[in-house]
Image (cartoon, rainbow, N blue to C red; front, side, top):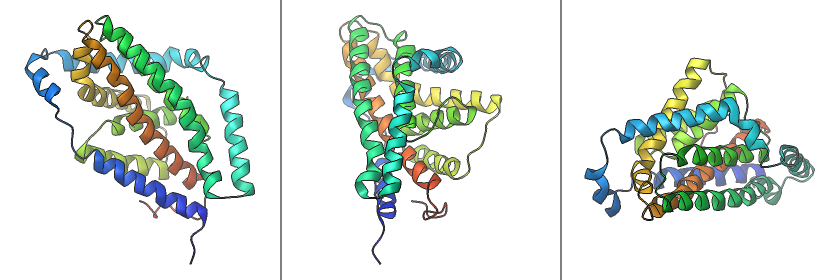
Length: 266
């Protein structure tokens, strides 16, 4: 029996998920990382943990309104409505991929912004102060992905989902596999975290980011040479956005379909 476009799209996303997990099986131990290993101050990891956690909390508490001034929320919601209407009228491979296509166009601008910001501050040897800016661009980018797939981002449940997406996207090996399963569980059975649970997830996401960006943020604090570390902002942002688009797309297909039941997992 020929599969309908929605089932074909679901299977395509499942293949993309398996590829993402396979590529993230091992953390890359580069020559640069090995060179920097014995030069990292002992307290830098803890300092980064705290800096990332404070950045997330600050933006959640006071920064979302500022971020929303950088794009038209109404326009993105309208674009989603147009794509959703088109998919209902004629559900084809093209119409089901229109959401991701529009999200990708918006993401390219954010990747350029992140790269320019990271390289510019790296040239000045500014590492830690870059963290709130990087987190701001990261959340702005994920917020736009959410809107392109018809989701909001300002409720406790959606904040938890976004934090979990970021944490998992920067994980490796067993942590990546288990984290991806927990994301799938949330998609199938969303819940509203209490304040303590949301705070705990902020700390987990901050730890995941600080562990992955440890060497680059150290390097970014060195004038001129720090441009290399700052340039990695774009690489990590791109990885997170790739995973976010994948999971929001899967979530949308599940939430709008009776054809793909929760037990038809990838």
